[in-house]
Image 1: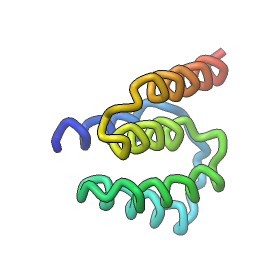
Image 2: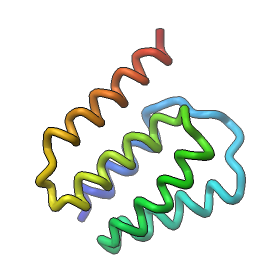
Image 3: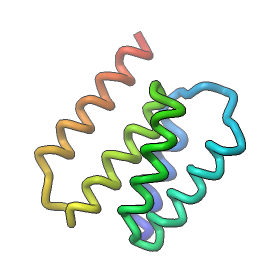
Length: 97
């Protein structure tokens, strides 16, 4: 469980994001984290989808969504996870260039 929390927390720190975060976005993020920690991945993913719609350029959200989708698949869809993470990495590279 600590490893999952570390992955989520690491994502919160690494990628740049818009500075203004609405209260609704904070609520979705907190609800997603709570559901993730409770292993309720379907509901967590629903919150992240809402958050992604509100923050389409936020690589932290894309990163967390990829992790949740992977955990939701019982860590079986590794190829899809790699593709998602490569996409996130390419977005981060584009932002930093």
